Image 1: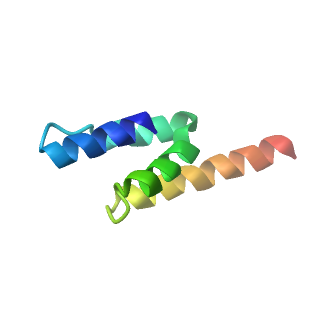
Image 2: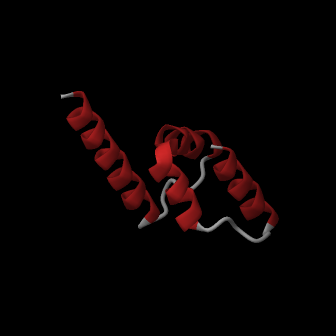
Length: 71
């Protein structure tokens, strides 16, 4: 969530941005809830494609892995 906030600040200032690959990587290693919360709080990367699609794909894969692990 912190990195999304930093990226939003950089976007507003016109500074160098945090690569989407890094933001998605953080989601992949467990930061998906924070990524979705940050998108809402900061109104950041909400319409960006394919970023949104990749984030949802990560969330679905993690949910599937969690269900499989619990079963």
